[in-house]
Structures are given as structure tokens and as C-alpha cells.
Image (cartoon, rainbow, N blue to C red):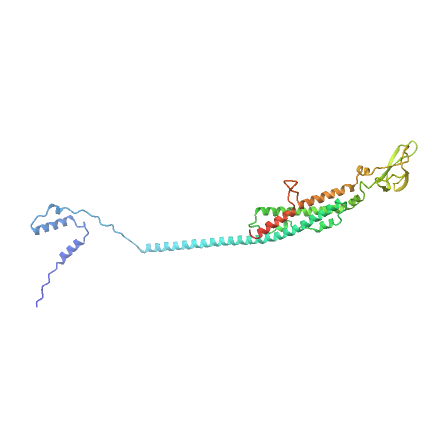
Length: 355
């Protein structure tokens, strides 16, 4: 059986058509288009119309997107990414350090607050102890004032004052932390320590004064203005024609104020006792005249007279510092140290509780 002859393929023509077909629209030249039209017209025996020779409308091809990546670009990208990663790591690290600093600061602040709480708790206890001693001091002073008012010397007061020491001076504030403590409490704490130091100094002065005035005060209490007649005036003339004098002499024994005067007074002159007739009437020379009770003391007061008043004033002034002023007598009455100690203890305890 004879093989059928395969049609011969015109590769050149096919390649030419394929090349033309593969061109993008508008890529063929005008001359090629005209030649194709002439060839088509010749094969059909007719002349192509004039419109066949007009070039088709040009359509712009879509823009070509190019992505050119070489090794250097990749390296730069990798390097940039690496740097960015390093930057992020540094930022995170710095943030961690910042948090560490903040945590450290918070830790230090917390430790300071904890110490402040412990310090305020301790100071509250010490202020409470100071209040007990201040109260005792006030009671001792008031008892002494009562004794003086009853014309009795407060024998034990000097020793009592010396034995009481209110241990709450500025030394108790050394090394303390005041974190979280109110300004009002801090100020009152400082003022309180200052006033306590002044009270300690003042009570020591009063204790010394008690020792100095003990003798004069006791003598004064034994000899009062109402004790009676203690002096007499003796009228004498030393020689004929000499001036007449009146000599003040103390009586050997005092007389009661309302006692009937005797006919003679026993007077003491230069340590010598002698009897002198009491003046009644007529010539007074060589006679004695009684001095009214209290007149000599008023004219010639001794140191014992003002001693009780002086000591009384000191005791009352010191007691007022502790007790405070009466608010009913003054709108600006100041609180005493005992009351202030009570309030200070409360404020310090509150600070010690962290509130």
C-alpha cells in the first residue's frame, strides 16, 4: 500500500505568519499592511478599497512592570532588616533597663516608706511615754501650788522635778524617714520636741529656785503680818540737853495683835534684854511705845516676804505650759503640752499604719 504523500509544510511561510501573528497589535509597519492588502486584492481580482490602506487606531500596550533584584539589593535588604532587628532589640533592652530603673526606684521608695512607717510607730510610742511624764510633771506642780497656797513649803517638789526627764528632744528625730507623713504632723513633731526641751530646762530652773527659797519661805510662813506686835520704840536722851531719839527694839516675846498691852516691855537692844516702862501719858522720855502689828514689815520688807509669791508665779507659769490655757477665758487659748502629746500620738500612729 502506497503511502499517501504528506502535504509539504511551508515552514518559512508559517514562521512568517507566526511572527506576524505574534506581534502585538500596532507593531506591524504600514508597508507590511499595504503589501498584505495588495496581495489579497490580486488574488481576488479586485482592487482593495482605499480604507484598507488606512492604519488601524493605535492602542498603547499595558506598561511593563519590571522587578530587578540583584545581590546587592538583597544584601542591603538583609542588612536593613538586621539593623531594624538590632534597633528593636536595643529599644526593648532600653525599655527593660528603664523598667528596671523604675522598679529600682519603686523598690527604694517602698523601702523608704516602710522605714518611715516603722519610724513613726516608734515615735508614737516615745511620744506616748513623753505624755506620761508630762502628765506626772503637771500633777507635781499643781500639788506644789496647793501647798504654797496653804502656807506650806513643797518639800519634795525639788526632788520630783529633778527626777522627771521628758526624753523627747531633737535627738529622737535623728535618722528618721518621713516618707508619706503629712506636713502638719511633721511640723507639730518638730515644734513638740522644741517645746519639750524648753520644759526640761525650765523645770530644772524651778528646782534650783526651790532649793534657794526654802529657808526664806519657811521663815516667812512662821512670821506673818498677823502674828502680832513684835517691836517697840524706846524714847531716850543721852545726856542733859542732848537730842531725844527713838530706838527701835525687838520684843523678847511677841504679843498678840488684840492683846492688852503690859505696863512694861522686855526689849532686846544690842543683844541685851531689858525692861522698859510702857508709855501711857505725860513725858515719854525713858518709856517704850509698842509698834503696831505689820507696820514694820510693810515699811521694811525682808527677802522672805516676796519669796512665796515669786515661787508661786514660777510654778503656775510652768504648769500652764503643760495644762494649757483656759479656752473659756481667751479665744486664742493655746493647748498645753499634755494635750498636744495626745494629738501627736494619734497622728504618728496613723502615719505608722501607712494611712
